[in-house]
Picture 1 (tube, rainbow, N blue to C red):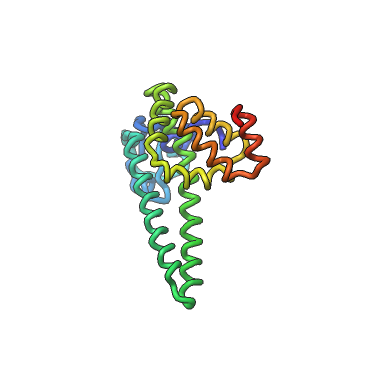
Picture 2: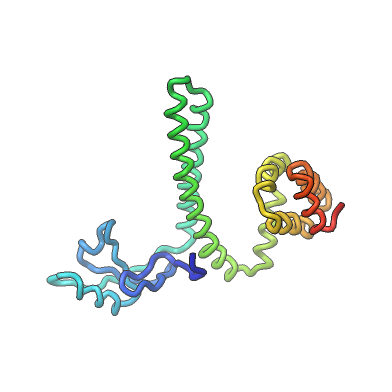
Length: 218
């Protein structure tokens, strides 16, 4: 994936990204606006360029505004949360299914989880390339760091323990050190100490020794 910000959509003619909230143009002809077509143009010149490959008797460019970023984020979160809720219900059905139904329901759960993983990965890319950039421009990195630390501090200890017990073994050494290093400098000493002890139990002796050395803790 390129480091270039993808924007809302790309111009159908020149492929330039059209940003969230930006001005763009569409064709007045219905065939250019069907779901499978959905032509959008960043300038009237780009709209004019598409006339060479279509056969419109009478057409003109219609000015529009791309959606702002915030409603798109809210909608994507709602969709993902709905998918997670459906998977939770399906997992419960698998756990209590009869032998005859278990195979079918497990396959449905597998397909649903694969679909959710794909959608969630795409959403994470959207947040990294679009949302985080917009937040950084609006608030600045120091304010974002403070918000992140406040969110982490609000997580109940028992839920944090469960999450870290899953996350830490799956992380590489650099990500582990970055995660706990942030807590070392930004979290209360007792919270950081609890995270270190959790890492001690969740990681292999070699992995924990490597992490402890990088953090400068025993």
